[in-house]
Amino acid sequence: MHTLRRFLKLGNFFIGCLGILYLAAGSPGAFAQDSKDADKKPAIIQAVMCEEIRDYEPHNIAAVFSIAIGKVYCFTSFNSIPRNMFVYHSWYRRDRLITTRRLSLKTPEWSVFSTIQLREADKGPWRVEIKDNNSRILKVIKFGITE
Image (tube, rainbow, N blue to C red; front, side, top):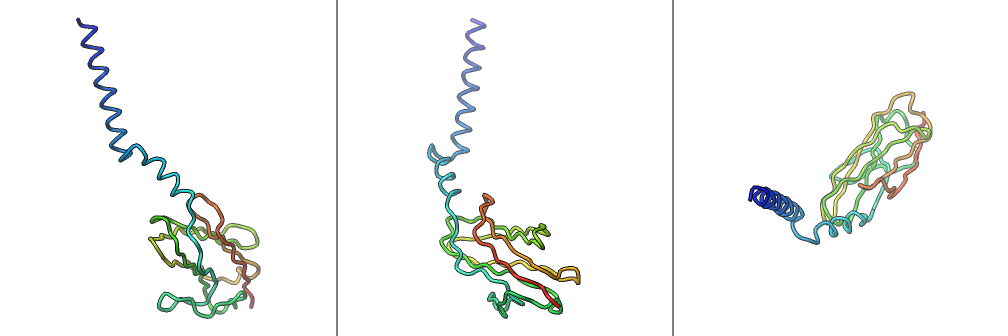
């Protein structure tokens, strides 16, 4: 009798665990849906380097910038965003990673930007890699900093 009670308690424990897993998933197909969404990439409408952002729009778009302007912006606009998610702007100077910025995207369309402050040592070739949640490169923008 004692063994039977222990067996029943253990069985209730496992049933409770399964119930919690079911509730955490939301439904039996929830995990499959998440993996499908994870594979979807947002579409880039525009990805540019510029001198400033005004009214959520890039201004003075260029590929070469003077150190005298003090900072440069990477502006990226997306549509077909499958769900609220993050993208990353990874800034490289001469193939060396300088900084990575995590930026939020919201459905269905969204624009984001990041910026760096320029110093005298920042002259030379640069690039920004725009990446999704899975570190897949969506776009690379190359630019230069001069006198």
